Length: 310
Ligand SMILES: Nc1ncnc2c1ncn2[C@@H]1O[C@H](COP(=O)(O)OP(=O)(O)OP(=O)(O)O)[C@@H](O)[C@H]1O
Ligand SMILES: [Mg+2]
Image 1: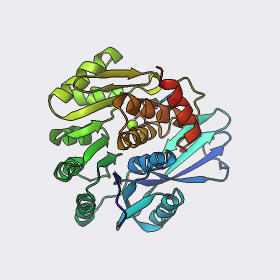
Image 2: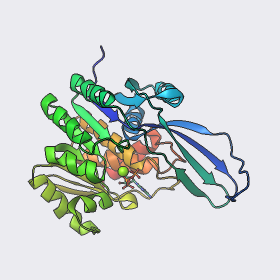
Image 3: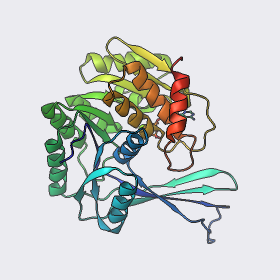
């Protein structure tokens, strides 16, 4: 069997359907243009980003019903290897529509269905058997899935000697840090919640991240700041990287692209200075494309070259 340095985990994937229309009017039929379909969900997006950079990963995700079948087809089209845990309930769909009159984007999302205990067990068993160098746990948890699910994944990562990269929020992030992760990527709002404050100013991020590291809960904390860029904090380092000024079309998938860029750079043994720059380059490159599309390699590469001297 092929072995993978990087495994991504998506417990709550989706098929994202995106379209355009002109004018949002209640009670009337709104004509939508031909839809585009994309495989979605944190881990799957990270796998897509890695593929775009020329790397490879194994995507582990749940799939059920006809939407699940479509999800597998879409992932195959992206040339991503995968291992699927079949579920009794169907994979969710999200709907993203842009009003061309106002250029406003509407994002309709659904919660993922409840997973059975045996499906959850199968997910954890699959992860335990893989023992990759890097394990990426990204995205929301399904309704009803215990908030310590990623913590269980963290325990598996510890036993397998895998470096765990986590991109999630709220209670799921709090719990995972009780066991510990290699790298976490909260945005500044998620970091504020994690440390129990209403908001954090940029100059307070370093201290908050350093505390997490000093408590032994993560080795690397990357805090994304949207259009302002990101900071990387370790025990001894603090690195701020500004986001390049790009023609922004849609920020959907910026965070996942950033995680993909960083994991790929880590797997290539790049320095942390390069890791954060690849993250910002991929995140910002993702904003240059419409809807759920991530980034083009040429854009990410060009932005990385520019960021090298920043
Ligand atoms: N408006 C923007 N202009 C340029 N770059 C951006 C912009 N928004 C996001 N980015 C890039 O994407 C990275 C991640 O964005 P952000 O901080 O919004 O993550 P996030 O809140 O986790 O996003 P998501 O909603 O995808 O989860 C940023 O560090 C930056 O490099
Ligand atoms: Mg995010």
